[in-house]
Length: 190
Image 1 (cartoon, rainbow, N blue to C red):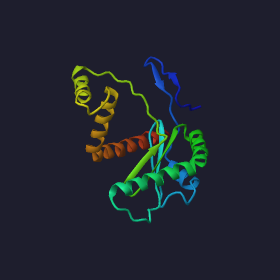
Image 2 (cartoon, rainbow, N blue to C red):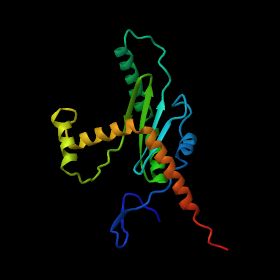
Image 3 (tube, rainbow, N blue to C red):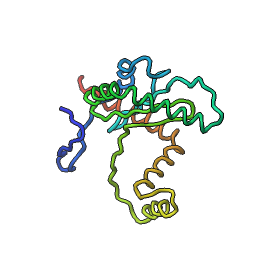
Image 4 (cartoon, helix red, strand yellow):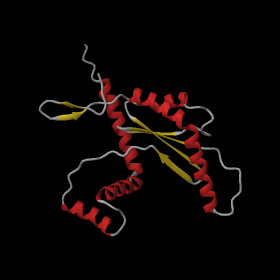
């Protein structure tokens, strides 16, 4: 039986996070489950070990606005209205998905140049940093770029992610191929 969020003894190697079920079909499941009138196209669905994030595009605003600030305010207001109007249905869908995939579900919407995420998960990450790495974080805090070491680390991870996206995409594809080969296993009959 697979469980999520529980630790299990792995033998000599120590403790290991229990395996979560595959979420390879999550995009298809949400395509069939989400109401057709919520988004103008298929939403972006991002899956990791702890969370599934669904971000959909809302219909464009028909009104004209005097400046970018007014347009951004109207877009933010439209996203807020979507969030309030769909809350009960989103909670119901999230509960079903959380049961199916054993991951939290987070939501977001975008319209024009405005993108907002809501109900996102913030996962603590334990790490050991040596003094040079701590000094980098402390410099970011001391300079006002971040309020804490935790925020500085999140900032650094986002920056690396932005600048290394093509490399990370290649790495994810290679890992997927390894997972496929591992699942096939060798043909030992013969």
